Structures are given as C-alpha cells and as structure tokens.
Image (cartoon, rainbow, N blue to C red; front, side, top):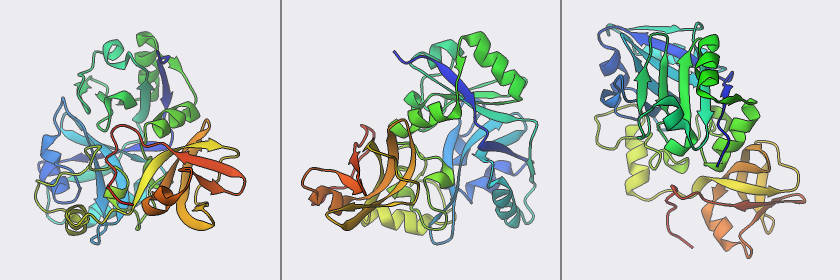
Length: 300
C-alpha cells in the first residue's frame, strides 16, 4: 500500500473568474464541458489555438461565486492575457489570486482520509478552499486549492506526510499524466496525442470552442501517429527535448522524468518496429510502458 503523502505545487497557481457569465464565457473557449462544473465536480480542460494546438491546460473548480483555474504558475500571466482578449461584453472578471495555493495528496487511502467522492473530479467545498479528486484519474490523488497554511493543516490533520514535489512527479509520471508545458509543447502538441480523450479532458458532444475542428478531425480520421507514454529508464535520464531513436532513426522525444521513469512522446510506428520494444538516447535505454487507461491506435 502506497504511503499517503502531500506536497505544495509551487509550479501551479490560481486564476479566478467571477461574474454572471463565467460559465458561458469559458464554455466557448475550452475543450471540456464547463456546464458540468459544480460545487461537487471539477474537470480538466485545455485552451487551444484556432488550429487546435495546445496553449494551456488547467483544472476548473467551482468555489461559490467564482470559478477557479488550477493552472501553470509560470504561464499564468499568458493565460490571463489570452482569456481577457475574449471577454468583450461578457459579465466576467478575471484575476490572479495569490492568496490561494495548490497542493496534491496521493496514496491508496486518499478518498477515505479526506472524505471525498470516489469519482474523478469529485469535490468538497470548505469556507477557505476546495478539495477535489484529480479529474483525470482517481488513482492520481486529490488536489486542494486554499491558503498554504490551511492546506498544511488539512493534510497534516488527516495523516498525510509532507513530501518533495519530485516525489509527486514520480507518481504522476508512472500514471502517464502530463504537467502543462513541461510535457506538452506549446503551439504544437495535439490533445489526442497526450491522453486528453481517455482522461476526460475533451468533450466531443459540447458546442463549439476554439480549436474544436482540428481536435474532432484528428479523432474521426484516426490521425494519431504519436503518443505521450511512460517509459522506464535504464541509464541517465535524457533531458527534456532530447530526441530518442530506434536503429538510428528518430522515434520520439523525451519529456519530464523522475525516479527512473519518464514521459516520452513516442512515434508509434517506429517504436512498434523496434526488435526489442525499446528506444535509446546514447547509452540510455528507454522502454515504453503504456498504462491501463491508454487506448493506443492500432497499427504496424
């Protein structure tokens, strides 16, 4: 049984959207169905270019009169600027909220220790913040948006031990979960190459949103040639952006890594053609290990 831990995610931050039109405003912009967001349900979504390329990913959480976005800290200002361009006459206010931080807890007993619903994204409201299951996978753990000291009290009193952010990285990587622009190349990555369909980050039944046409076409025409896949690393972990090869031919690109595992954007045909099912970078050998939730397209 995994030991229950928590950590503060200093690489994540909060954007707050208030106003009467906050739901309809986001609904026309992001990949998921914002009308599903409620005090008891959070979702995961992405904001794309008109050509359907990745710009930002975030959790969307309801907290009273505001919608909170759990987004990348280092790119929050870019997201804020882009969202404001679409405000027009919508009755919304979009602000960065630095009174709130984001933390994550993981381990097999998360739901019982925090009294959270079992479904992905199941949320519980408090006066000072929101606790919610990771909307992608229940086994990924639970997240909290609140003041830092409040979060430490919540998790400490529940019996979680504080850990380094690198420990959480190892956990999410082995679950195949990307973390913003660390794993998804801005203005290039496609949602369906990075698990957004299986992980519930895109809704194909909702109305129009920016980048919808290419996302739908990629799905219905089966255009997926690459996938972000966990890899087991034998040797020194390649730095993010390092090209990976099979028999001297480019077969993928390294993303984040921790604890002997990593994520790599793998060219499926080249990997499947490998005699031993591995990729390499210099003397380092990387073995792709798709996790159970992944549905890889069939092919050679």
